[in-house]
Length: 82
Image (cartoon, rainbow, N blue to C red):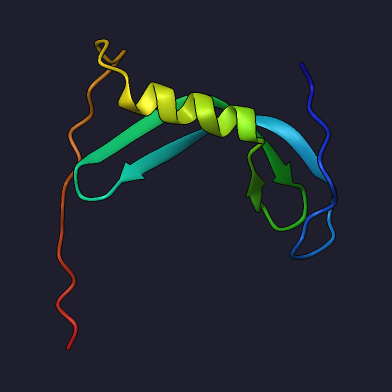
């Protein structure tokens, strides 16, 4: 199902639906990478927009108790700036 999007809020560019990979974060407890997310992507500046039904499914997938399709190892670094 192709979704329609308004022009980009930031630059006024055309927003077209594409499948993207997103990271989903929930506090310090959860970091999940979700692939194949339908998102409106501005063809000028790259800003991404999600419809509410997609956000609900993204949250469900991130918090699901089923085995993930893949597990990634992610380095964690700290910035040392005063």
